[in-house]
Image 1 (tube, helix red, strand yellow):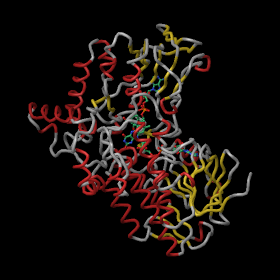
Image 2: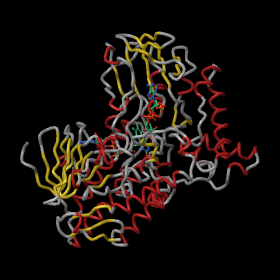
Image 3: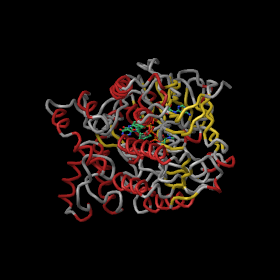
Image 4: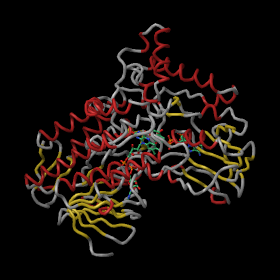
Length: 542
Ligand code: FAD
Ligand code: N01
């Protein structure tokens, strides 16, 4: 191993989170370096180049808010930006702030070990580079570690196998017979796009999604200018809203509306784009009866769009609307009406084997020139657990989190001092406009580091009891909603198969206030010390 480079901070990941963290650290005068497994910046938007990929939060909101000049100089072309445009935006930010010179690309952090003697992390990479840093900041993404499907004998397949989460856009799928797996947000977008050019497309679905038409369109003349004129007010509303959007849920409980009025409001919300539907009434994620009324509406929309009743049956979800991630679609249901597209429900028709050129089920054989896979991510914890992370007393993160993740405020982990997880488990992260949540975390961490520099504290660590109380609160709040009613990737699993809800559903605004209060109270629930000493000598700041 090469000699370790000494720095104040190492930032792992160069997506929206890592880039902003680097900007803040530089601005605040810390020596910092970024490390990124990919060959470029962008994170999600670098890797997920599959056809149809785009965001489902309006582009004017799914963008950084920290730099008013950036807000004014960047123009979006569509209401919901496509992957390529978001990547160009991130590239623009990296160039504007001259960030690439501070990032090691094509370099993966493989291990990080806390050194009790020095109060620092020794970080190693797959390129033989090492870093000796005071602070380790994991901007590794909540949706960056792909989950591979359990397809028997996939290695035997001779054609291309493409994963949406690591898409190789040099492979031409036009005119090909494609077998596709997975119908979550990524799969739905990819299926709609591929149906236009595949000679045949067989879609293997395990769990149907609720998908709402994106109603994407080019931004109209004057629309962007109007938003830019009051951008900061819009961002302020988003920062203090439940989900990080500029338009919060409409007041009123669905079940208390007369059927005709309820229907009208749902119709308006349906036509407003994906984020509109769950905002149609204030109680859709809390009240089973209200939710079912909206779910019946969404199921009827599927039945009205898809021609074949047998397909409608397979496509109709039975779990509460929004308890799994609501998807955004542009032509997905219409794609299933095309003569070149068929749908297989793998719960009814089990995949038993992949051969050199087919997918074989217990009922049929499906020829394939290519296989495409959108089976999701090891969400919220996967990228962190993939690092050999060793904290105090040899504690290993994979072992510590085997019964579900624990992190105080979703930011810091007891036993792992001077380490911060941007949008970690226990924070609003994936249940919000993620960029709003990223900015809040990055600014909090940067402030914490400057506070420590001023106070002379060199080590900060989450207090175990505060962490336990926080995770209890995360669980309690989740169980006040309908989220736990479905089996979804929001849930982590314990060793004995119990489910643990990972993101914080208490709201972006309330969470921000809590983090600010913690800081104002002298980092309540953290343990700070002036020197690299053993845990038993530290004084809790409670
Ligand atoms: P990422 O963008 O995931 O970046 C993390 C980076 O860390 C990756 O580049 C990865 O290579 C790198 N990394 C991880 N581990 C290591 C390691 N050990 N060593 C080196 N590098 C490492 N959110 C929304 O709010 N709205 C949307 O519309 C939306 N659309 C999405 C669409 C798709 C297809 C996906 C997958 C996610 C979407 N999300 C959306 C969530 C999205 O992930 C976040 O909005 C945001 O881009 C996350 O940024 P990040 O920097 O936190 O993480
Ligand atoms: O992943 P997913 P994703 N055969 O986990 C199924 C964001 N995002 O990449 O649930 C057939 O949602 C699996 O079934 P089950 C967004 O936050 C946003 O699509 O395990 N199917 C599931 O249905 C999103 O939620 C956008 O029973 C198999 C599906 O594959 C998150 O990223 C776009 C299977 C995976 O769905 C993840 O989305 C894209 C098998 N063997 C992503 N194994 C926007 O538009 C699993 N499945 C904003």
